[in-house]
Amino acid sequence: MLLEHGRFRVLILIVMISGFSQGMLLPLIAIILEHSGISSSINGLHATGLYIGVLIASPFMEKPMRAFGYKPMIVVGGALVFLSLGLFPFWESLWFWFILRVLIGIGDHMLHFGTQTWITATSAVDRRGRNIALYGLSFGFGFAVGPLMTRLLEIDQRLPFFISALLSLLVWSLVFWVRNEMPEKEEIGSVRNSGSIGRFAQTLKYAWVAFLPPLGYGFLEATLNGIFPVYGMRIGHDVDTLSIIIPCFSFGSLLSQLPLGIMSDKYGRKKILSSVITAGVFTFLLAAIFEHSVVWLFITFTLAGIFVGSLFSLGISYMTDLLPKSLLPAGNIMCGIAFSLGSIVGPYLGGVFIEYFPDVSFFYVITFMLFLVLIALVSNKEHRPMANLEPL
Image 1 (spheres, one colour):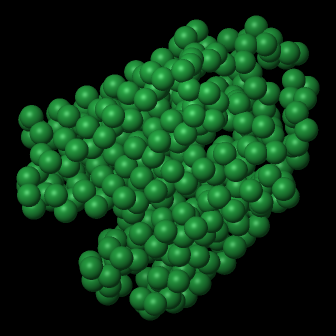
Image 2 (cartoon, helix red, strand yellow; image 1 turned 180 degrees about the vertical axis):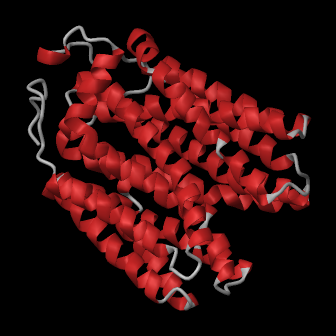
């Protein structure tokens, strides 16, 4: 069995391959459906299958993890992912593929819930931001590499699915070398002996503000990937240019993920979150002003990635600071729910905005969303449960 350091590496690899499969699946299926003559609205709706899977799975994962531990959750989730990926080539049907996307959403959420909770529960306070930043960095790297698999469509449509399924299987098999552990069971004070609803209520009471950065990141990521290409073409940019501009956000986030995590350990999560969101607001204001300039879009997308591309991992770290270990499973579930809600709502609101306000910059939607998160974060007074005895 692997020791703690080896376990952390395995968990990071699992997250990376999960990001890879998600990053591959979104553009790959979109391209295949577009070539098949499926309308853009149905194509976009089809992509929500992943996030619907996350929402379906979320209420049912805390109790099994408490009963069986982290490892079984990761094993089942990983199996769902690689089996679903391997089934795509066998039947090209819109509804069948949608079901597979939902199953991958469920499996991926189980993977993330298991790895995320395991890492947050076992990381020392002074290394928590660093470890969760590495978690976010590995997912971001996989997500950035995944779209390269679309090039294999020229060889064989089935090839990307089979390669992704094989890689997922190989990394998944490493989990069997890791010793299982159980989540913290001792619950003190007001959370003692409470059921799932009670734990979620306590989690929301103490850490609601920490769920806003993951929600904002889901809104941001899905809107930039799903709606900005439409808006970009409407204001005169060509598809090739947009396909290079959009990855600048992911590239920027890879540059800053680890430094911001380390800085949050040193200077405090709330201070770093407030600073990067403020910088993000000004960055997207610049994008709105200079949106017709390709050079400025390259610059602003990269800066936006540097500043707000780490909102999800910083939000998880902040949530972990605010909660006792006994509430971390519920907290990690709610981070996933917040991200999924942002990912579903963002593209819809963005699409409605550019439809009804065609003469107003699309970037004002993102600026306003980030500003609301900033106001909530700055104005909130933290209330920590007595069970959380760790120094912050």
